[in-house]
Length: 102
Image (tube, rainbow, N blue to C red):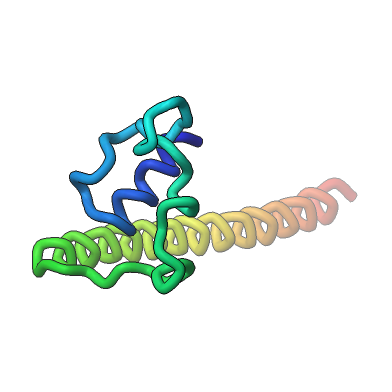
């Protein structure tokens, strides 16, 4: 949980303000929760990406996520088709077995 808070603080305030894991409390004023140090005008508003590198990294992450979702959909579609075909072949087999069994 503390790592998540530190990551959120890094996103809002910048990567070098608070070291990762330092947002867990304690006597150090830098370790107070992010909401107690955040100016009111910034509360609840995400920080805009500052550099082209950040935008590129975000787009690469979105591309990887989209590809993984498409792959999962592909595997799901193949699994559904396999189940339907297996059921149909099983029904035909039972029909043939019942017909030849008489």
